[in-house]
Amino acid sequence: MNIKVAEDQVLACVRHGLYLVRDGEQRLAILLRGPSDMHPTPQIHIDIMATERTSAERFLAELRASIRKRNIYRGHILSLSVNPYGAIQIDFHKLPKIARENIILPAGLLERIERQTVRFAQHSQKLLATGRHLKRGILLHGLPGTGKTLTAMYLAGQMRDRTVLLLTGRGLGLIERSCAMARVLQPSIVILEDVDLVAEERTRPGAACTALLFELLNEMDGLADDADVLFLLTTNRPDILEPALASRPGRIDQAIEVPLPDTSCRRRIFEFYARGLTLRLRELESFVERTEGVSAAFIRELIRKAALFAADEGGEIAIEDRHLEEALHELVVDGGELTKSILGVQPAPPRV
Image 1: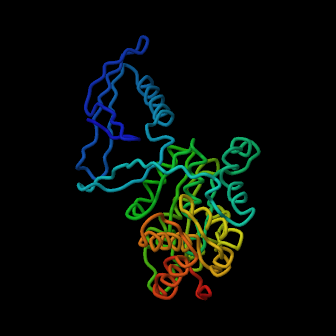
Image 2: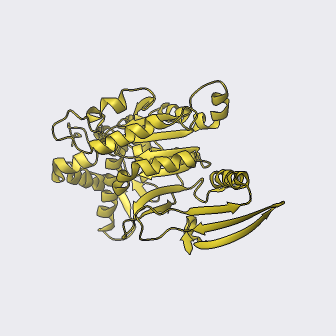
Image 3: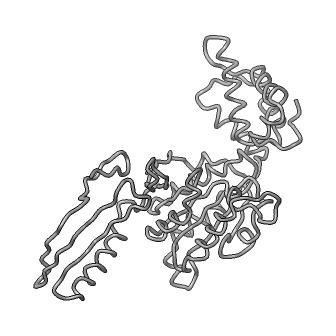
């Protein structure tokens, strides 16, 4: 059978086969029975016949070690999903390369996040030798559009030797199996976006997904201290998180707020999202000041709209003050409260 692996490659694998193996003076007969696409939990079965039981056991032990060391999924970015037949399948992903300068956060914040993730990973063996535990959980929280997901993707890109398990959408129902893969393929990272979807405080009226919450807690507790697995969680609503997750060391070791951009950050965000455009602005500092309390996503959309207004006039796309003025009015006044909420604007709107 052909198995799709990373970067659109296909690996031809034996689905059913009988191997007759010579191991020194020992002879082994190994029967391989592969998975069925229509079975909800595909498994590979291996039966071994040998003249001595110890020979078969030794071979299986070596095989398990090889599976962990040479696993085709190791070091890749993966997610689990369910195929049309109800069986679990493994999907490969390729994250865009995110340069460090593209992560625009208040001074010192990115360094703090890197210290708990990238630097920790670099020194993991030294830390383990001194009796430090390796399993850990980091929670990035803040309003929508502040850059939590972008930061998480950047961190994953900086730890290329780690297997990354993405838990989003329907994959949230496969927490147990995703964490099992993370254990086998460690060092690894489990990225769970919008963790409040499965970890809402149980005492809240109408709280749902309690089964998934218990599953997540069990998986985080079930890891040995020397398991090199990083849980990287994000949420827009830290206030509704289950205390058993958010307030207990060993599950979430550190919660880090990703705030709305300050004045310096907003200026850099304007410059970043204006790359490739012609700017003819005389009042840039005024717009930086007037967008106090908005997210990076808001500024990105503001510049996109301004570019569209400029394009409608024909000729070169050159953004002037009036184009930004029109875009700001459309987002803040015409867009209404829902647009502002989606783009991460604080309740008090920018001055227009």
